[in-house]
Length: 105
Image: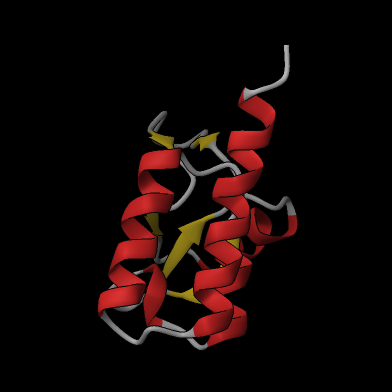
């Protein structure tokens, strides 16, 4: 089963570090459920990319914990692909939030 990481974590079984937006794959259904309950992985199974789901799924997995560079790439990919207004506005608001925070002293 493949999921999107929605909160950075280190896997206690493999000691691998998973960043937000990365895929996480396991055949262990109980492990998958446990990580979902703890808020580390999303319920959405990934196919090709973060942008492959419907609007609600995409907005759920794209969050402010992602790097500015990752958000900018997702924004560009969405604009060149499905070009969904709600997804674009969501990513732009996350990027604007980063700019607002970086200007504070």
